[in-house]
Amino acid sequence: MGKFLKNILWATDFSAESKAALSSAHLFAKAFGAKLLAVHVVPDFSHALYDASPALSAGLAKRVESTKNKMFLDIKALAKAEKISFDKIILKEGSAPKKIIEVSEEEKADLIVLGKKGHSVLENLLIGSVANQVLRHSFIPVLLTKKRAKKLQYKKILVPTDFTPKEQIERDFAWKLAKALNASLTFLHVFELFHKFSPSEIEVIFKALHKKIQTREQREGEDIPISEEIVRAMNAPAGIVDYAQANNIDLIVISSLVHKLERFFLGSTTEKVISYTDTAVFAIPSSVKRP
Image (cartoon, rainbow, N blue to C red; front, side, top):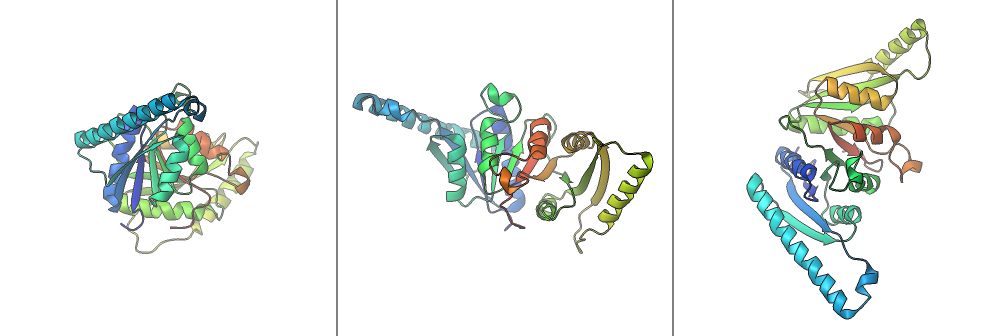
């Protein structure tokens, strides 16, 4: 299992949620025997300012370097306070989402971990702009966490399912996560009620769904508690979020993008789930293959 995730990249902006995400990154690193890397991106000044004058350019460059040095010491201090050891601390300057993606590729990371929201006012609305951009462009899974009062654990994993071939990738990731984290798995299908059905029609549909569940691919020799659930809801995101909250789910495993044409935009279901749930989300890009 240690080979599943070998390099985990924790991205921080020193917000409360990014610091809380560190606990999850550390937990995953221990569970998978992975290296733990830290990255912080210092905002760069406009090139127009750099070009204004040699004196101003030198002063701005010095200020950026001073900030990077301070951030490095702050990460070291945080690691000491949390009794966490980083295999590497990386400081970059520029656009945070772009640099996080670049670092993940340079370091051959298998997972990016970051808080769902950040410092800015706009990022406190739904899903943070940095997290959003990382999700849109990452080619590796992204674990988004939110600061919660309850004890950190990943013992109950939820996998939304729609019976499409693509969902097998989510199921494979979920199997490996559950095995390493010693967690249970729940595969959830949300029967959307935006169409009107008669009671007899609903009964027929539910029987068909249960039949599909019974014919799913099964794994032999896996000592993992598994349950399959079908719930009714007005829409899939609402059904997933409500189920996760009602059943104290610790982690939702879901594809971050639905179709190739949506490469620039998050799939609507996933985006809404991430925005409204208090549960950590393990988002899998459409480009990722079965682990």
